[in-house]
Length: 428
Image 1 (cartoon, rainbow, N blue to C red):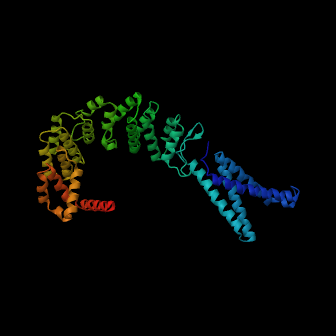
Image 2 (cartoon, rainbow, N blue to C red):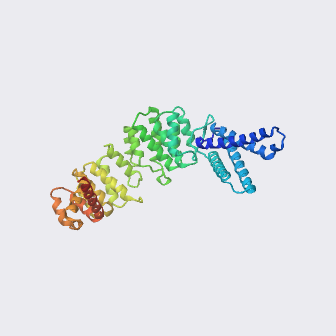
Image 3 (spheres, rainbow, N blue to C red):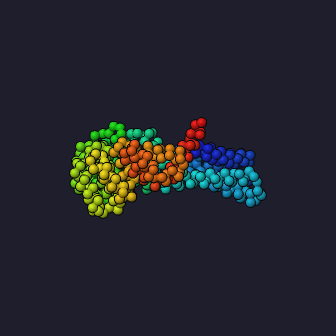
C-alpha cells in the first residue's frame, strides 16, 4: 500500500540529518580503533542507530511506504531527545537548539501526514495503489485530485471514481458522481445509477449536472437509455423526501424528446398541487412543447380559485402565467394586468411577462430609468404618474413594470446611475 507523496525538501533534510549523525558516530568508532573501546559506549551506538533509522526512513518515504514515515518519525524524535539531553548536561547551544527544532518539526510533519493518510477514507486502493488524494499533501484539493486521476488514468477512471464514491466525505462523493455521469459511457452507467439512487441530495444533484454535461457532447445510446427511467422515477416520488430536482424535466427532454413530452404532459403531473409543476412547465416552454391551451387555462382557473395547497403557490402561479404568455393566449395581457394589481408577490414577474408580450426586455426599462436618474436625479422617480404618462404611449405595457420598479428598486437605480457616471468619467 503506497503512502502519500512526500515533500522532496523534507526527505533531503531528514536524509542529511540522519546521514551526518550516523557518519559522526562511525568516525568516533573509527577513531577509537576498536568496536569494544570505551569510545563505543551506549551513546555512540545510539547515535549510529538514530542516524541509520532516519536514513532508512527517508528511503521509505521516497518509495512512498508507510514504514518509511514511521522510521523517519522515530529517528527524528530520537535525535531531538538526544540534543535536549546534551543541552541539559552542557548548557544551551544554538546548533543543538536548531537541530532539535528542525527534527521535531519534521517528525511532526511526517507523523501527521501518515496518520492523516491512514485515516483518510478518500484514499481507496486499486491494485494496491492509492488513487485519490491525501488531504495533508501539498496544495491539492479533492477536485484537483479527482480531475488529475481521470486525466492520468483514463482506463481506470471509472473504477477509481466508483471507489471514490465510497468516501465518507460529501464533497468527494459529489465530485466523483459528477465526473462519472459526465463520461456518458456505458461503463460509467452503473456508477451513475448508484449516484442517482444515493440518499445524499447533493450527490444526486451533481450526478444530474454530469449528465447535462455529457449530453452536450457525444453520449452512448446505452447510457442515454439507462438513465432515462431512473430520472423519470423522480417525478413520481414524494417531494418531501428531498427528491425534488428541478433539472429533471429538461434532462428528460434532452435524453428523449418524444418520450419525455408524453411523460411530462401526464395528467397526474400537470396539477396545481404538484411540486413539479413549475419545473415541468418551464421545461416544456423551453422545448416549445406546451400542453394545449385548454389545460393551461384549467390550471390557471384552479390556481385563482385558491385550490392550490403548496407551501409556495406563487411559484406554480408564475409558471402557469409563463405558459399562458408563451402560448400567446388572447387573454394573456388582461390576466397579467389583473395579477399585477391583485398579487403584489407576483407583480415583478407578471410585469416582465407583460413586456415580453410586446417584445420588450426588462433591462431596457432599467436603463431607461437610470437615464432618468442621470438627467433629473433620484427625486424624479417619485413622479410615477408623470413618468408613466411619458412612456405609456410609446411602449405598450411598460407602465406596469415601471410602476413596480419605481416603488421597489429606487436604491438600485441610484447605484446603477452612479456606476454609469463613474464609467463615463473613466472613459474620458
